[in-house]
Image (cartoon, rainbow, N blue to C red):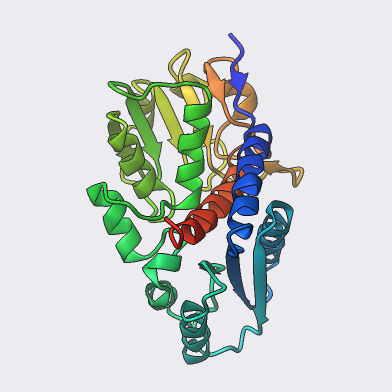
Length: 283
């Protein structure tokens, strides 16, 4: 068996075409969805991510504002910028690129963003909405993973899903989203004594720990769906995920590649969240 690929690039193109059409419809009503991105410091990876987010806005017809600030920016100055963007009617989504310099409390900054503009889905109000099944913004990476499962017509009801990783950004919200679809969910992490025993039971595995080869072929049940959220570099410096792709693809039923899998979906779901924030103004 060779697993079928879940192509994040192709799915992103489909979803962004829909976003573009909805943006055009909103513009006809006098509203241009706007995303503000704040980048503090010179983190190389963050600069790439930010550039891709701004480009995605342009490609879908949205308005984007990119604010670049030096690493010396104070916490008070950053909070003041967030406050100003909260009050800006042309901005429907606010994203502060993480990580922030050590002297700035990232959680304080996230909580300063209005929940109505929290298109990253990191605010405690967004987390609470997801926890209780209420309307709110879902974090973009796990939201993208759910869209990938939906795209292959995979029914989660009654399935056993194993999430490797417990971060607030991916692991925990991923588990809650799977739970909402009536999957039985197990969260594994560094304290799990026998990861292989857990993953061999799984119909769906989401690997999200940022560690190469955390999931290998002998840990996967034949036919399982494997979603690789990881973003690492191999010994040759090439981009790779958390999954031993070449090995696991011989066992799994479906698998996401890295690159070209979850990555483009994350930015696409950011566009969806920003659009939906703007659409709420005319609902």
